[in-house]
Length: 261
Image 1 (cartoon, rainbow, N blue to C red):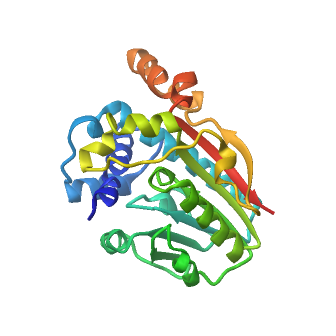
Image 2: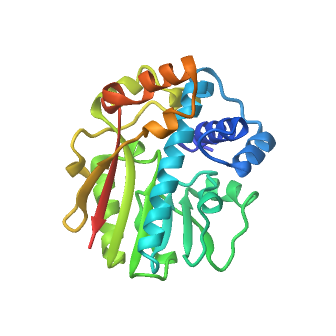
Image 3: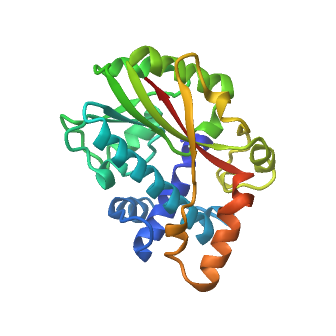
């Protein structure tokens, strides 16, 4: 795998770590894959604070997907940049078609641990090249999540993806997390992804930057809800809140929702 693809092991480790501790989300599949792969992470990428952040972030995305699935029963779910994530298991794909999308080498690795069904498919594709959308027959409505992906795409590449999604589907609900421009600059010096060889990332300060002619910004979500901070105790709770929540965190990470009606 190239350096960007190797970043998938950082959230995989984080979700395995918090699942074992009984925090934020139950992810036995992450535990299974992490134990089997034994990928060597080092430095900041194995920080327990980062693991907590990865766990909470995934739980927030899970909640949003569940809610959208309840209100849009005819929608397909598309997870762009799925890595080895088990969201399809954690959320459940009952009554919805679900598509996990990632680079061919990632999907090849993923198929060692996940089986396709009539309702669940894995698609090999690059978010910067919309050809993978041809594998999706449904065209009415889509729930799309991009967790930990936008920072590897330029603004123009994100807009192109938005245009492609809007051209394919009649309606779209999209949740995407993003670095700020400050975080992107700081990432060149200090970021866990550096430990797997990634040095070039991108950020935005205005959520309208990802809008297209048909895809509109809806609202900003809280990246680290208080209820998850409260699962930690004492010193850990205090430090995690300082590092990953509040005004400081907002200078680095944002969570935006978009929609095409």
